[in-house]
Length: 305
Image 1 (spheres, rainbow, N blue to C red):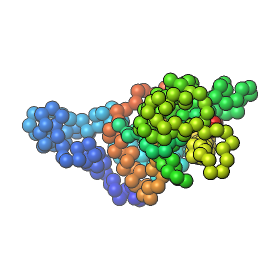
Image 2: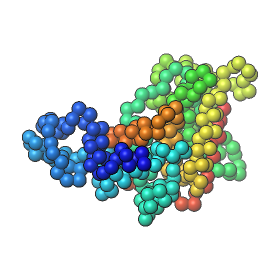
Image 3: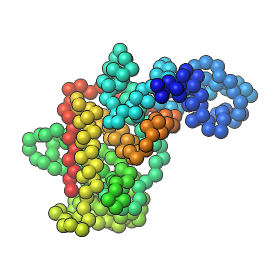
Image 4: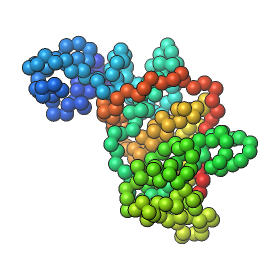
């Protein structure tokens, strides 16, 4: 009912997206004129040069024949569900005839959950490498086969967790870890890690590096925040993706968890919807996705501290 009150027609959705794309009013991409009229679908014709500007060009909606109202309804459902929804859940909610269609939509929506040009984290930052994957025999830890390595970058605010970043990596080498930290953490920040040798060069990059020993006593620094994030992510994956997530699509699930976690204190779910639509208007559609995963095992996250 809340959705129906906000968006009664396709025109309401179009006007909402128009305000997001041009907050100060329409501006012709070709001549800069500020007046235009709606022609058809998502096209606006400039009143001065007759250039037809697409409302959805450069957004995740570009090239889609699906009405904006259906897209908005899907985004409303995804953001208002506490733990998010799987492609199967979205298919049932919108009564879509194809699971592949629902999965492709989720693929696009998760791509929009990464805000372009987002700022780096600062202050006291915990960085830890987690391995994700089901239970496999053989070697455990960072060198275990069949596992996915994920770097968790967690902003520590005393006893509270601030914002986070989650990135999948190919290996836990120094070059790989230093690249992630440089991309996600402001220079001059205090970076807490475990004693893994791959973190040894952070001090030379301008960070205040503190290596935490195992079994730290009470009152000593620890990596408790990254362990908590790993636990919450594991719970979220189990509740939302009961059928599991294949490695090729793990990055998108990490993006969705990060999007939700960093906005967990927002009291209004409507704000979460607004944020997703706003970012969807800034993000080009992802490259054509491969076939949806099938028969993959459940992922389990465990922190390496």
